[in-house]
Length: 172
Image (cartoon, rainbow, N blue to C red; front, top):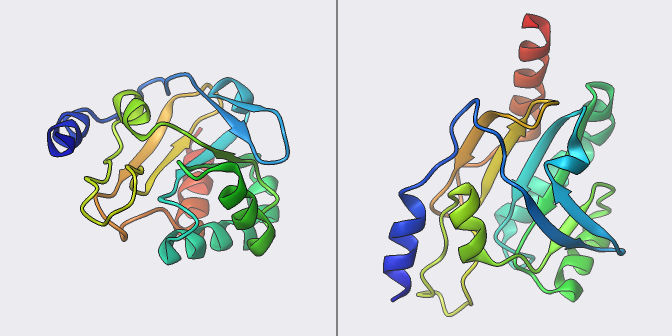
């Protein structure tokens, strides 16, 4: 029963200071994203988005793209991941001019077991997908902030995330 799997997945969450688990996923444009290894040495923002169909996700990804240069100036990399098939992830990248890596085809349940994100229960007629989840990782791959959403709203935005990273960097 999907609801049971969702409840099980939602019982686990990454906390600040936890090491981000290893995840691998194919990238739009080729190659493989290996987290957190590919982000080592940089601050990073890891965005799990519901899919190309989600208007809130598209707005969030566009928001981070608009501020990509400012994030780069903070030694911060951005990556995004979804359950979307390659064609839909490619459409997201093309339509919104995303310059940061976008991974596709993740397994929602396996990802939930690793990072604790909420997973849809299928009541909307779509295959299981990861709800919006965002992480800010420190250069050593540890979670600085984890934000979990169980629905369409409640997610990282670029301005708050930049402000947080600036603050943390000023304290170290």
